[in-house]
Length: 533
Image (cartoon, rainbow, N blue to C red):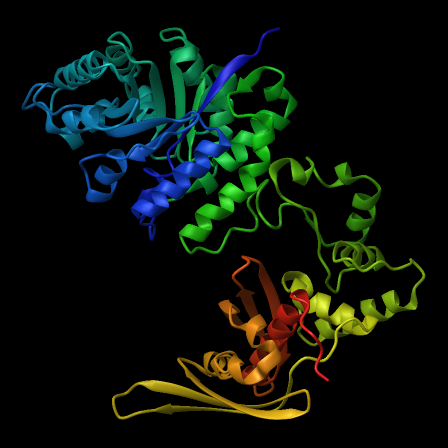
């Protein structure tokens, strides 16, 4: 039996830009679209040319995509002039796009309330816009906005809106769940009805995630007949987001009910680029990645319970529905107070420490982890600190920088600005060094005191000059006069590696200091810095 073709339409650069706090620069758009083209999606909706300078500039460029069709987005013509004289349609036709996607109302309630025109005028606007775009030679698709609500309210009119575009040359009719309130059983029923009027090979689905069903609705729509799937990377989008393509694409490839019946133009080998594509988007937006995302999240294949780890080591299929490497991700064995020896051994193996099952150091390390987590440490999210703990027990970590004494003060000057000042007395190769620094907080000041004086550290200056703190989090573990503070620090360097360290103390400065020192030690160790004499 021959497989039916599915087409992937990415709308990250348009729908994703409607996310609160997201604003793509022209450089961001070029990097994201290039990544999407490398992945192999069929359509990249780049934005709305003419609506803002960034989108206009993006559509004036020659992108030379290898696989993707650049698609311009806009709306059907307005009632007060013809399609030929509509400036918005002209900007779409004149853009360097191969395809044009226009949205139009398909819910009579919206036609009346939002547009303030008659149902007949709306149908005419759809018809004339379709004819004009098709005549220009560009591929035309129609986003039927609010379609599912419109169908439930007035099925005949909603279908007539679709037919007005389809009968006048639309390649794709996209059924939009604009407010995200439709459920999978409704999608199945309605799409089955629509396919009686428009062939499934010309239908698409555009789902929003307001009931956490955007992916489920998209999969249901495909099984009911649609052949184009719209969505965004990481589920970016207005309100609760859009259907997440980093969940949909691997599902089409790796789940039997889909791969036996459908095929994509995306190459199977490109699936390994999916995690990288997901994390590139977060990096460009300066957002912390959602580690719990299916398939591509850092925790998607993390195992914490000791019995789970033992089972995974015998057969990964026990707790993993796919091989993480298929989507460019990796297995992560978490070390915590719930760990057994299997967690410890697996984690040690993953960082290159080979040990025998009966090595007494394993038991000692497990006891240390549990004792430390009892007083507030959490190695669940601090892999670098765990590796340092393990390697110190194994005798692998040399002494680098000894910090014998430090002092931090905070003051408010006459202008009202709060300034933190730090002093740290360091020792390297027996030489004592005094470092000072200021910052917008005590931890930043202490960090600056050490790192911004790396030139004084001689042998370590080259190793530490590109170290940068990315994130700093504080959690008060208990209340009262004996409160314990846990500090987590995320660090990175010019090689793009991120690592996480932790410190615990009744004193927030001391907890921060411990996490900071672990960050420095880990950087020096991974870069193979020489030991202090």
